[in-house]
Length: 120
Image (cartoon, rainbow, N blue to C red; front, top):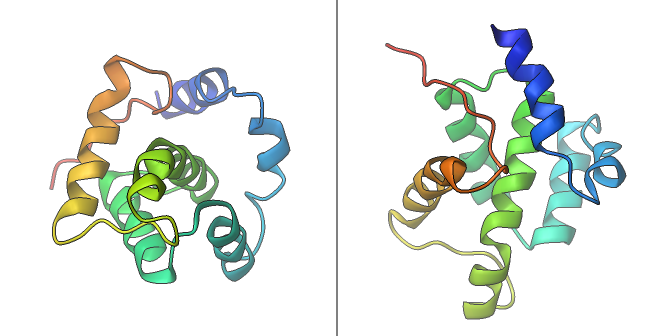
């Protein structure tokens, strides 16, 4: 079942720039963060929180988690940078709210991999 999700990932995440950005997915963590910082104006704390959130959601594979991170940052970039052009900021509770919106948005878009949150 998980392999089907991985195969669907590549079908669903095809954007014009997916193959262009995919070369960055295998960078060491610091280099990948630095690239995200340049592309999305996200600070290290926000990046780490997003990464941890997706990991806890059940996306354990780093490659697939980074795809979700990029899709999420793309999802919030225009809206967030319009309000605060220097860095993406969410405010108290705002990041979790936006992550949940992003995951719930799957029904209306093809940006998210439909994974079930593991039961604890």
